[in-house]
Image 1: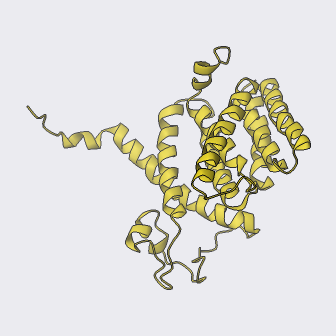
Image 2 (image 1 turned 30 degrees about the vertical axis):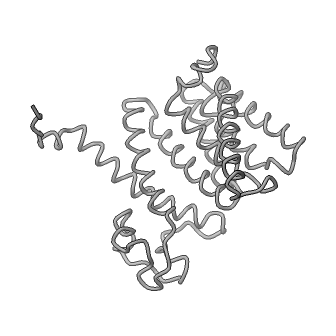
Image 3 (image 1 turned 60 degrees about the vertical axis):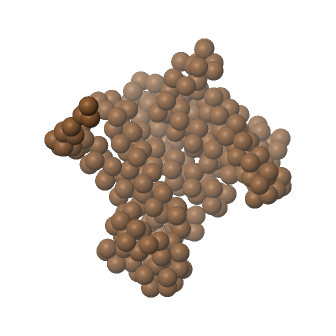
Amino acid sequence: MIAETNYLDLFRPSVINHLFLFLCGLAVGSFLNVLIYRLPRGEKMGFSRSRCPSCGRRLSAVELIPLFSFLWLRGKCRHCRRAISLRYPFVEFLGGVVTVLWGMKFSGTTGKFIYLVLTYALIGVAFIDLEHKIIPNRLTIPFLLAGLVFMGWKGELPTALIGGVLGGGVLFLIALCYPKGMGMGDVKLLAMIGVYLGWQRIFFVLFLASLLATAVALVLIATKKMTRKDPIPFGTFLAVAAFIILYFPDLPGLFFPLVH
């Protein structure tokens, strides 16, 4: 027997709450697209209306609706008909998904909002480094300082300091030995991550990021989409690894039983 669909379930408080978070995440994802585009170019992050990156025309209000506008325009600028990068709808959708995930993971947690903002920052870092091979100080330094304040408020400042020093210190030593393969942006990013995740998990973040970077690089080299000499946006993989550990903190214990 096929169970009847109860459409009233769609109006349950939990469903409505998740839908609300998803819509809020879409809006934040739209802002993240502006940040990803403007920050590495040195443009102001004010409230000026976005423009088409191809023809420079100001976008109308309808064209700014997250996700819907991309589908409505069929992935092309209404004026110049140039293709819109898939990064725009992807980041918007990702913003919605991670916001719902945050609501499920940190609901009722003291100071939970800072983890959501940190998640958004990791998304910005990941895509900026992926496209431009840089990690702006305007993202890492403020979040590093905010993390120290937050952890101090929670009474965990020593753990945060050790995590920041250890995370940044390890990559700084690697950068000294291999300056062409590791930038100072990566050093500051891992220091920032260490402040939030603590020294216990920082090595697993580095291990997981290295594993992901190696796997992706091998695939791209095998498919001839990159060469061994091409730089790898390691900050992107650090951000992905930090996101995984932030939302799935028990994962390191499966590989390293002493990590809690």
